[in-house]
Figure 1 (cartoon, rainbow, N blue to C red):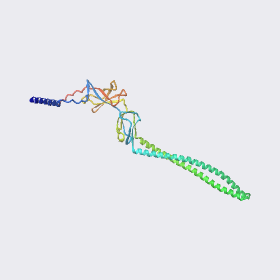
Figure 2: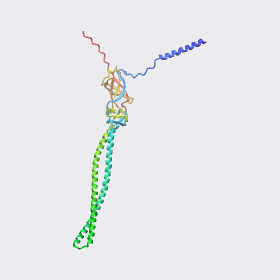
Figure 3: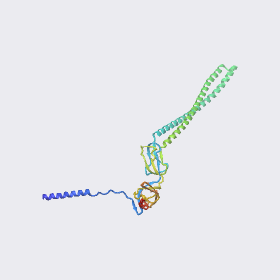
Figure 4: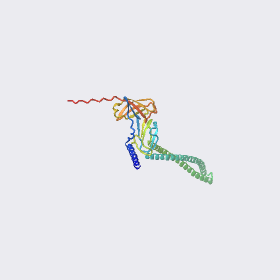
Length: 338
């Protein structure tokens, strides 16, 4: 029994070892291979991404910090739409200073206008008082002149003359004072008007400075130069940007003129030439769209077509059929001359 048990154990161990070796030697599942170029007869089928034919790079207008971005890549824009705002500390400081100066001058003008109204009222009151005092002075002056004449002729008592004289001198002082007060009030009105004119003239200059500062600061507001689709965008809020970034935004302006970028097998590339007819199929359209090979750039083939529907846009995948040219037969080797 002992010998039989040992034999069974050894047989089982041998089976386990054989199974383990089999697992190590068993081939693993191959990795999925990329889709190969499909050739049916003289036609080649390729897939590629739809891209716009016409692109407009939009540079950052000024140097500064990206404050806001109003459109993402893939979003549609219209001409004049605000797509980004850039802050420049120096321009903002100039704008704030110009704004403060204008507001200060406006407040001064408002104060001067209020002072002029009050001064005109005071001038009017002083003028009215001067007119009243003058009328009273003229009456007393006539009385005093008459008393002088009567005193010379001995036709009035000395006391009556002296009373008229005292009243004349007193009214003369009031008359002079009222005229001076009216003159001071008029001069104040004139002085305030001069100050107001100077402040308004200065405000005109400061308004020009403010408008210039606004225009310079407004350069940080980037607007779309055309209707189109945002293909790409750089930067994020809070990051530094400069006019050297010429492709801050890249726009596709004509969304009907599209192209498909293909990467055919190098062996069939010699059988594709610019001008060849091509057929483009996309999932968004049931019909094949006519196109043509516009250019061969390196190992890539560019096929142009016109989108018949608005839902065919850059970024979609298209299947392209191209009729291949006949392969060029090999040339026989030239015999060497004797």
